[in-house]
Image 1: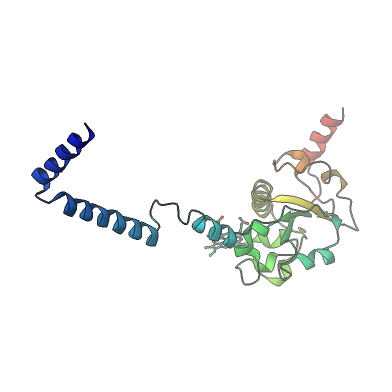
Image 2: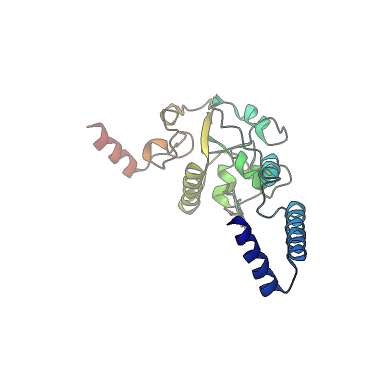
Amino acid sequence: MAVELLETLKEAITAYTGLSPNAFFTVLAAGVAIYYVVSVLFGGSSDHQPQHRPRSFEEEVQPLPPPVQLGEISEEELKAYDGNDPEKPLLMAIKGQIYDVSQSRMFYGPGGPYALFAGKDASRALAKMSFEDKDLNGDLTGLGAFELDALQDWEYKFMSKYVKVGSIKNSEASTAESTATDSAAEPTESTVAEPAHVSEPTEEDKEAKEVKDE
Ligand code: HEM
């Protein structure tokens, strides 16, 4: 039975390919060998080097360490986080609130277009859209409504994009009301810090506060 089947197969090979069975199997073996060599050399779907690509990708993209909460620090201490020490996170403050901007090293890191803001409270510069040295601080005195509005937009952007890791110690006024459990990056009333020395409350604010207090 098996011999008959083999004979039929040989006849079919000769009839369909015009090759003798021996030649046919030689050609088939050569084809398989060439396919194997090609797939090993060029990767393809073979699993001879399955981990090669993902491993080198992981090595290139190193995940950032999770943000570390610093609590209250002075402006002087904040300067150490300007990105020049690669071991330290890259920090920047708006309205006395410090954010970890390490994920945007291309903006704020050394050589970046906004490196001058790193390690500082850049509120005044952001409000005025200024890069001048005299504006690289958190002093909001004399700013107009338009500038304060612009600053508010920056603050919302930072709140939603970055993790708040602390606040700047303020010798003149307490920032305690904004240092509570507001790590959730939501631009809510309780997370919007208004250092007391910076802007006097308006009549509207006072009224709102009275209503709240009642
Ligand atoms: C010619 C004027 C300017 C141009 C064309 C420009 C362009 C840009 C662009 C393309 C980005 C990247 C946005 C993104 O991918 O999220 C950016 C980010 C930024 N810009 Fe400007 N900019 C200009 C002026 C300014 C000025 C005057 C300031 C403030 C003084 C400023 C502060 C910033 C900051 C802080 C970021 C980074 C925001 C973040 O951390 O996501 N820019 N700018």
